[in-house]
Image (cartoon, rainbow, N blue to C red; front, side, top):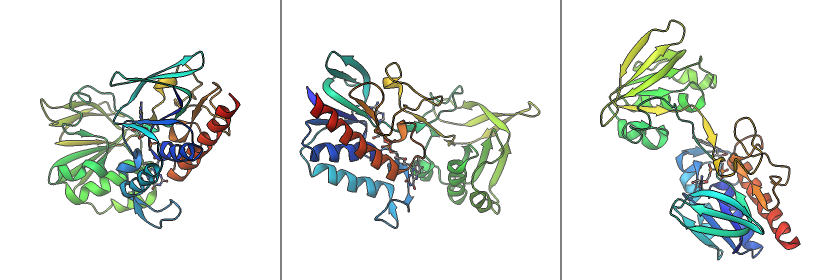
Length: 302
Ligand SMILES: Cc1cc2nc3c(=O)[nH]c(=O)nc-3n(C[C@H](O)[C@H](O)[C@H](O)COP(=O)(O)OP(=O)(O)OC[C@H]3O[C@@H](n4cnc5c(N)ncnc54)[C@H](O)[C@@H]3O)c2cc1C
């Protein structure tokens, strides 16, 4: 039985780990990866102490700091279940392991929202991707589609017009991202925009060969021949683990109070997976530290 299990090793989880280790809590850090969303981010200009740093490099520094302390880690394992025991919690993993602890911090962040259309899941990783920054270069010289109309989609389109043969930008709404990002695309001769269009199917046998889209105003269907599609339509919280145990808000985020408490004694949450407003690295890190300090107080009182 550990005293504490921290699930997730993004900015929130790794910061919680450092705070827990410094309090000499017997803790386990369990995560699918080390770094979370910043691994897919190029330039970060708003994490204090660094005027500019790339996401993976910042997460490398977080990791080095975690490694300064004797803390057990299981990286590459996802938590697949969490149940309450008489005294504490049991966490089951996707590798068939199970771990017990008196307290748990959920720091599982967010993941890209899928389109939920036929063909998407089957061709995931075979032309369907959710991170233009990570996978864009693979599609250099090809025709691609970027799905979405917010900042992530506009940034993805801005990157891809520089390297792809042609970029189709498809959004169910008018463009909602920052004007500066919209302006950046104005002169791109290899960009076509389909606003108020939805994707109805991703087509292809073993790889993406095209997408079927539909004009939401006229109902007219069109086919776009593309080799890659970048789905950039927002993020959803990884809160499924605790959805039957704690209160979630209308977008699935875990409701917490000012001290990262979920309402279930011993169960804390921190970072993007919570309903704390503004999703930023500095905020997730701060919330991770608060959750660990509050978990420490909880453990002391037991
Ligand atoms: C493209 C992009 C650019 C961004 N740019 C900036 C920026 O410039 N500045 C800024 O401050 N913020 C930026 N952000 C936001 C920032 O990345 C997030 O606010 C921050 O990463 C949240 O940290 P987190 O630890 O809460 O969650 P995440 O970073 O999402 O980490 C979650 C962790 O939990 C793990 N996990 C998930 N589910 C499970 C499970 N079931 N079992 C075990 N582990 C699990 C994941 O593998 C991951 O390690 C950006 C985000 C994106 C997507």
